[in-house]
Length: 356
Image (cartoon, rainbow, N blue to C red; front, side):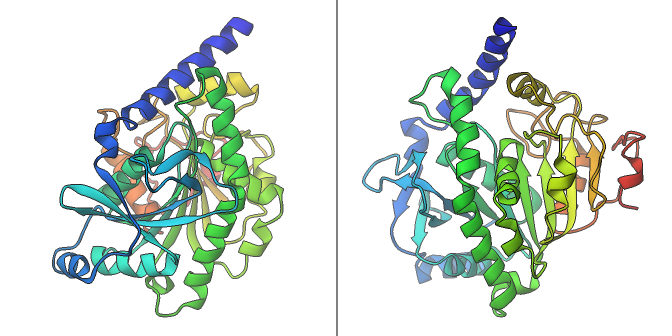
């Protein structure tokens, strides 16, 4: 059993380290530049005429190293949030720092012209540059404005064995900053009537280990302060790397979203490995009763093979067309059409919870 644990940990860590190292080269970091000022009027005018389909917002709790090539570190700065609007300018990603998230939202809306917003939290294996890449892919593929919550989920300075624990711990402790970010987004959505958020759809997308942020919101009780009034359209738990036991009770505490959607793949090879490591069934892999009556459960086993990332075109793989249609619907705050059971294969136990 010790050998199995070591093998699984090694495989997951190698996969995550490969992602981190790919995006941690000098060549990649040279395509990013820290900019301490908001976007200039000239650049805003440029994109007002030709909308930017790849601009996005990064909300980060990493330690800032503004004089370094790698200006956002691999470690958390507890209690601190940085707001960046990433804009392609002169062959680089200019990371414009804003003091107020609201100002970054206003500028992004003016430059991008998309109508809906997604708060996005990723799983293990991401540094600042790889999270920016994921956010940009989502932004362009689904035509949404992305607010990426960027927390440290790997470090290139630790061993493979220690990185799983590092990522898991940060996905939990970062709930302090995640709560602050959601509180500010909620305030802008519900109180700032002139903000683009006020009349547009807002959904929250939690992938893999990023779902620990939601779990911790419920565990520490801060979710109650976010619940009223209801301000989000869809809360999406995607390939959730959290214990499925007790998930219904957890989700019943969440009242800030109109719909809760749980996406799972019983054949997910990454989550099967995580189940071995944590000695618990993962929600994105195995869904068992009791279920949350307020949630919709989607089984992706019919179209996603053994994949863990079945919502973005990554690692040279193209997502199935049915999945693209489905995700575009829910990321824009809509209710998915699930009559195509050849594409979405609901298990008998879950079929009664599918949205009609």
